Structure formats: structure tokens, C-alpha cells
Length: 475
Image 1: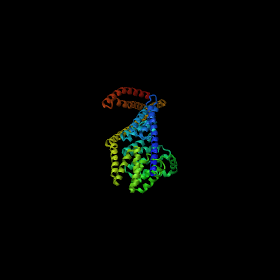
Image 2: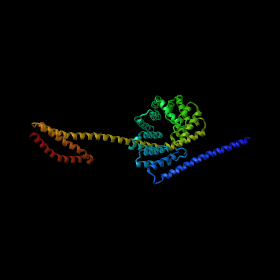
Image 3: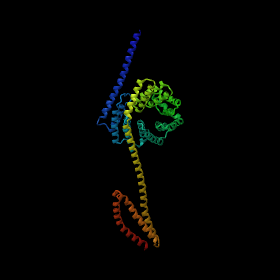
Image 4: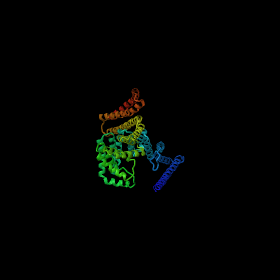
């Protein structure tokens, strides 16, 4: 009887597994058909450029592995199609498509560990004047890229820029939640914990002041059964900073609230870094099983969402846990993963390239600043020249009019007339001087010769006009 039950159980299991396999095969086949249709549309010469860009971007989502139902990641293909989309978008000068394609292109390079290319692309977007409406989003992407690269000083620099734009253009309490999280995280990574706590606490205070609004908004996302880190990011950050300050019990109270929210929904890429912090907290509290559970969850999600930085950290943490528990095979396995990822993604050449890009960007920004100051100075000088140019003819006209109305001539009018004449000729010299400098390339000898020739021409004219004025005002 037992054998019959076992046979039936095995038969049912085989049928169920076959059905599952059949369903997965149908999904994979439908995705392949969809990709083939997109490729056919992309290669169609008659398709409009805008449609071609949209098709290329859709292909990047498939190949990146983020598209629902797609399990195979081909990041080289994602980079290829996002690069084409970016190039085409620049050609047609479509701001939305340039931003969308450019940030996708940079993001995929970052996921592959090529942070220098990612950052240089994002800085190119930042310096594109037609993308001013996307400044806040671009600063956010740049700060994320520097964070992934481990360059926390530049991470803080662009996090400040992002905060400035968010505060300047936000008109809603809801959108102000999490404004300070990036700066707090930057200070946390720089191990400036007091500053990190200050900024994290500003978000927490904002949440407490507007708790009803945030809770009401988040309840809509709970209904989608997909974890949405809006108000929960505040609790994540408060837990993390208390963990770093050694307040493990306080950290755990914040973490448990977030865990409860995740359990009611579905995990997303917001959870992978959070799980690692929870694992560290449980490890500090000597609860090894829970520490191992959350560390594994962190590694699993980091791998799925291609979060290289967190994958390295979680692999290293798992290696240490297994080593402590005398499970040397597992410890060696995760240590190998940790070393391989660290060497392949965070190497000296990569760091040098990022440093060079950052220096070049600082030089470029300094040149832009100098150019703006020069233009401002030139505008001021031109306004002064325009004022002088307006004053001289008015002054000369007034001298002649007053002298005409006066019943008797005087030496005062003669002096004023000669003074106005001097002003006119000096103004002419002032106008000529910059052009002479530019023509001679600031060569003093050539400038002297040219100005001497001009003076030789102007002096006789000046004498004749001065004699005329003396006669006019003394008659």
C-alpha cells in the first residue's frame, strides 16, 4: 500500500513539474517572439527615428533582465541598444529621449562595473543645456554612480546638488520625504556619523509631521503587492545609522517595521541593501540563524538586480559568518566570489579613470565659472561705455544750447566746450583700444605704432575743432 502511495505521489510530482516546465516554456517562447518582433522593427529602414529609439530602449529592458518574465541577462546587448538610442536621440534633439536613453546607457555601464564610462556619460548629460529640466534627476544618477564606484566625496558633492534642486522646485510635503537620505548616506559612507544622523533625522521629523499623508499614499502601493520604499526608507536609514552608532536594539525596532511592510508585499531592489543591514544587526545581537537568513537574501537580490557593490559586501559578510561557524567550504565559496568581484570591478585603473574624469569635470566647471564672470564683467563694461557714449553728446548739446541762450559769451563756455571735445576724443581712443589689443595680440610695440598713427590723424582734427570752439564761444 505504501509503495502504491509512493508511486502515485511521484506520478503527481512529475505531472506537476511538467506543467510548470510547460508554462515556463510558453512564457520564454512568447518573450523570444516579442524580442524577434522588436528586432525586426528596429532593423526596418522605413521606421521613424523616434520609433526606432523607443524600440531600442525596449530591447535594452529585455536584455538587461529587468523586464518581467525575462531571466537571461545580456548586458552587452543592453549597452549596445541603449548606446544607439542615445546617439539617435542626440541627433534629433529630443530632450526626453536624450535623458531616458543617456541615463539607461550610463546605468548599464555602471552595472557592468565600468564606472568611468558611466560617470562621463552622466556628466555629458549634466552639461547639455537642453536638459536643464532634468537637472535633479541627473544629479541623482551621478551621485548614485559615484556611490557605486566608492568615490564618496564626489557622491556627497552631487548629493548636495540634488538636494538643492529638490528643495528649490518641490512644492509638496510628500515629495520632500527622503530629500536628505542621499546626503545622510554619503556622510555615513564617509564615516561622519553625527552628520549622517542629523540628515536622516530631518527626514524622520518630516515623516512624523506629515505621517497621515505619507501613510495614506503608501497604502495605495501596498495594494499592488509590491514593496514601495517611500516612508519606509526613513525607517531603513534610522535603523542603519543607529546600527553604526552601536545601538543595535534601537536599530532592530526600525528594521522590524520595514520587514513587516515587505512581508505584506513583494521584494524589490530596495530590499537587497536593507537585508544586509538587518543581517549585521542580528549578527551583533548573536542571533546567527537570522543573520545568515538575511545575508543570503541580500546576496540573492543583489545578484538578481546586478547590484555589484552590495553583492561584494554581502558575499564578504557571508564568508565571515561561515568562517565564524567553522563552515570552511561555504566560507571559501563566498570569499572567492568576493575576491573575484572586487578585483574585476573595483581595480586601480578604474579608480584612476574616475579620478581623471572628476578632475576634468572640475576644470571644465571652473572654466565655465570664469567664462560667466568674464561675460558679466564685459556686460558691465559695455553698460558703462554706453552710458559715457550717451552722456557726451547730451553734454555737448547742453553747452551749445546754454551758450546760445546766454546774452553774453564767457570763458566758462569756452572751457566747457573744450572739455566736451576732450571727452569725445578720449572716448574714441577708449573704443579703439580693445580692437588694437586684439589685432596686435597684446604686442606692446605694435600697439604703440598703431596708436601713434591714430593719434597723428586725430591731433590735427582736435586742434581745428578747438580753434572753432574758441571762436564760437568768444564772438
